[in-house]
Image 1 (cartoon, rainbow, N blue to C red):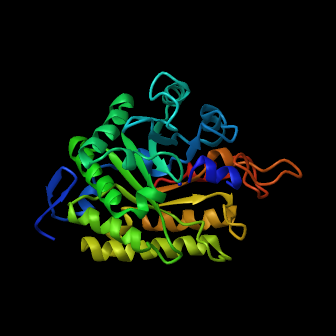
Image 2 (cartoon, rainbow, N blue to C red):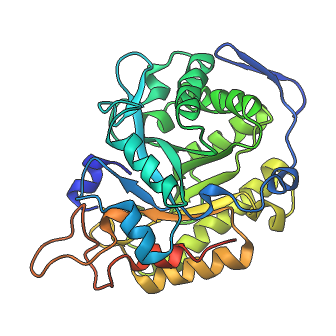
Amino acid sequence: MDADEASTCWGGPGATAIGSLSLVTVAPSLSAVAQASTQPVEMAAPYEYLGWGSPPSPTRVMATTGTKDFTLAFILSHGACNPQWDGSRPLTGGVDASTINSIRAAGGDVVASFGGWSGKKLGNSCKNSTVLAAAYQKVITAYSLKAIDIDIEHGEMSNPKIRQRVIGALAIVQAANPGLEISVTFGVSPRGPDANGLSLISDAVALGFQPSAWTIMPFDFGVPVSDMGATSITAAQGLDADLVTAYHESATTAYLHIGISSMNGRTDESDETVSAADFQNIFGFAQANHLARLTFWSVNRDRPCTSGSPVSDSCSGIAQQPFAFTALDAQYHG
């Protein structure tokens, strides 16, 4: 998801060359990666966006809800392959850097999220996988990050060449940063990945790349959905079946590399609502299957709207206690 979208209502053996990257294509073991970290930073790190929606103080949210970690969005391109917050705020030395410092001082940590729906994406601006990997690395190094999130949407997702570029860059980054948690976040249909999502997974398998989490965004389906909790679970089950086929692992093992990124309250679709009960249902499924990640968009919206005001980028549009979704998410430990 992104600021523009949210402001309306609210995201086989061989070798393959991608850009200037060439890697041996051997599918990795899901279970081996799963054992690399017993408590990932990104496991329960809800999104907060500092560019809109009256962003609440992260440290106050931490004190209120018990949450420790946040996924801060979004890193975009400022000029030619130059990463900045929202494509306009400085990478270091600004409000984003001071926010990260305050979260860490309070005992938490952050995941930097790249991409979203709108804005100039690094995947489009950086002309091959090597230079894109260098842009990702610049942010990782600037903040000594333990986790990153690639929210691949819109032009990055719909263009096969750019999808391959992103996956190629992440393979380089993973090799250069052992232990770094990487989430690849993308939209799905009610039954799981669409053709673009399946192609994304296929590109990863071809390069022997396996992220810490394939994270689905089960909302904005474009079709009527009456039960967003049950539909989110069905979409995750569809992804699980696809990962079993792609990586030749059991369903139980594949779940260890699946994440769900929901959207609290009213979504961008007028007939979609993720209620607190829906999120509790998603939480129970994630816990039962030990999913790698459970998050939502966004902390900014995790509060009721004032009387008479419509749903917006700073409220959920449903009756709820302030930061109820964040407080539940904070209890998630896989």
